Image 1: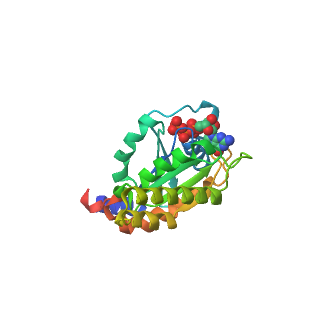
Image 2: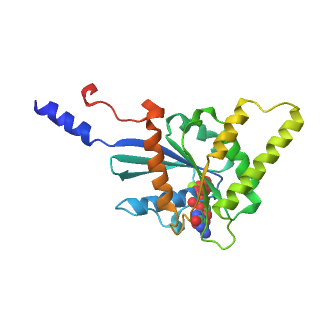
Length: 226
Ligand SMILES: Nc1nc2c(ncn2[C@@H]2O[C@H](COP(=O)(O)OP(=O)(O)OP(=O)(O)O)[C@@H](O)[C@H]2O)c(=O)[nH]1
Ligand SMILES: [Mg+2]
């Protein structure tokens, strides 16, 4: 009886755990963001920005919220590292794509990589958040400008694809268009923390709401099955 009640108590107080990947070009500010999230939500502060170097592989950080644990995986963004991102797609519950909103020269490259992420069918129904980072700088584009820039870039891409292949847009393009229309774009400063709590709030709500759709991706197991 004791074990049964203990198991029941553990089950009732157990937190659901969700995995969130943070991706984007090298230098976009992904690790700085993860460390800021740790500082805001954990007792032990994250690394000081001066101690952060380019990521080789991944960094991981957990945040405990009411009834929920968010596990963040910050993946290296250098060209050679991007080929491993897809290994995380099957098990993630949300995707954060970070863009450096002050580096106009690399926006096109950032959108090309973002477009390839959007094309992946494995994360089709997973909440996707686009973060326009480095809002603390005077030259950064706002979240609205970043969205517009991406829409213009995407419009050109579709136009040139249509001209090249002289055919109607397929189902994948339609899916992508719907996804872009519902895309959430938030402005943040990973360095100073502006907008970071709003981004985590958004993720918390969205993973909760979409867990029914995702079904068995959530890692809570029944106490009776252990
Ligand atoms: N001004 C400003 N600088 C930032 C911000 N976020 C990151 N940086 C700087 O941008 C540079 C790159 O930051 P990282 O966090 O290492 O970038 P990353 O995306 O993890 O890069 P990779 O690990 O190579 O993929 C560092 O010099 C950071 O201090 C920000 O919000 N504002
Ligand atoms: Mg990094």
